[in-house]
Length: 525
Image 1 (cartoon, rainbow, N blue to C red):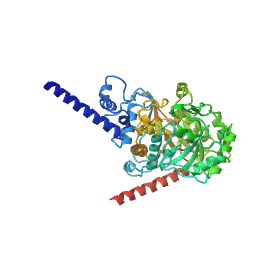
Image 2 (image 1 turned 180 degrees about the horizontal axis):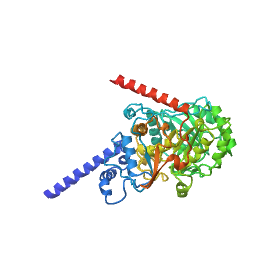
Image 3 (image 1 turned 135 degrees about the vertical axis):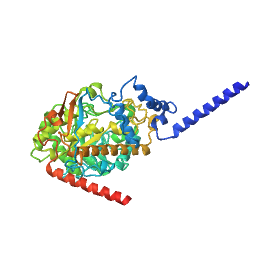
Image 4 (image 1 turned 60 degrees about the vertical axis):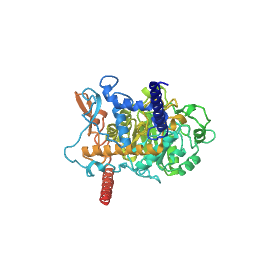
C-alpha cells in the first residue's frame, strides 16, 4: 500500500472512531433528548441555533414572528428552565411602533402602596394565591394554593410517562399544582407533586364498565393520590364542543388499563357530559362531588355562547350552590390533536373570554366567592400580568411547561413522532427524555416566571400580582393611542380587584413570607 493510501486509511479510521465516539456519547448522555434520539445529526440543530441570529438578519423570520411561540419567547423559557441568563440585550426587537394590542405596564416612580419585599422578591420568594380555594363555600379540604403558577391539564397518553414524571416531580420542587388532564391518574403522576384531578366527559378513572360516572370510584381514586382539588372539564380552548381525541398509536396497554378502554383504538371523548345536562344539574353534581370528597370543585371551559355563564351566575347568586373556581381556557390554547377549524376559529381568545365571564360575576357581586384561573399562553410574563390585572387569581401553563422540559415546537403532537419524547408514547423517542434532569428545568421555569411576576408587581408598587388592577396596564394601538384595560373591556370601578378583606389578608400573607425569607437569609449568614 502506498504511503499516501495508508495515511488516508489511517485518517479515515480515526474519523470513523471519532464519529463512533460521538454516537456512543450521544446515545448514553441524558442532558439533551434530541441528541439521545438523533445522535450526530442532532448537533446540527444546536449549530443552526447558535448561528441563527446572524442568519436571520438576512433570511427567514424575525425573533418575534414565529407562532404559536416566537423564537424570543422560546429562548426565554429555555434559558429560564436551564438556570441560564434569561436577560436580553440591546433593547426590544418587538414592533411596538405598529403593533395593535401591545400591553404596556405602568410602573410607579415611587414605592406606591406596596413593594415591601426584598429586592427582586428575593429571587425565590413564594407567591401564593390571593384566595383560599374552596374557602368561601366551606369545603372540608379548602386550602390556599402555594403558587399562582400551576401546570395545565395535559393527560398521560397525550404526553409520555417520562414527561408526566418530570412535570410532577418538578411541581413538587416548585410547590405548584399539576392538573392531571382528563386521562386519569398514572404512576407518573405520583412523584410527589400535588394534583388537581380533572373529570372529563369520558370519566376516565371514575367510570363504571359502561362508561358512566361512578362517584365511589372517584372517591377511592382521589383518596389514593395527593389530589387537592377537582376540575370538571366542560370544554377546552383549542377544541371546544369537540371532546378529546387520543390517536390509536398512543393507546398502549398501560394507557388502556388506566382509562378502561381498548388498546390500540382511537380514544374519542364525548363532546358533552352525561352525568348532568344543564346548569342546574351541573351545580347539583358539583355539590355532590364536593360533599363526597371534601375537595374544592370547579369547572374548566372555553367561552363561546354566553347563555351558560348568565345562567351560572344567576344560579350562584343565592349562594346555596356554586363552583369553587372557574378556569377560563382561551381559544389560543394548545392541544395534542384537533381539526384546524377548531384550533383556529372556535371559542374566544383569552382576554375577551375572561373579561366576558368575569364581568358577569362582578355585576352579581360574586367575584370574591370563587377563584378565577386563566389559561392560554399565560406562561409568558406579560400575558400573565394582563390576566392578573383583569381579575385572575392564578394562571395555568401548558405548552410553556412542555417547552421547559425539552419541547422544540415541532408541532408533531398528533403523530406520535414527537422528536424529543414529550408528546408521544413511542419508545424510540421517549428514551431521550430523562425526568431526573427535566424536573429541575420545569421547577426553574416556574420559579423564574413567579420571580418576574413579583419583580413587575413591585415596579407597579404592589406586593403581589393579584393586587394589580385594570388601570395598571394600557393596550397600545401602535403609536396612535393607548387605552387602559379598564376602558378597553368596559370594567366598572373595583372590577378586577380583590375585596378589601382579601387585600388585607394577602398583605399579611406576603409580609409573613417576607419575614420568613429574611430569617432564612440571616441564618445562612
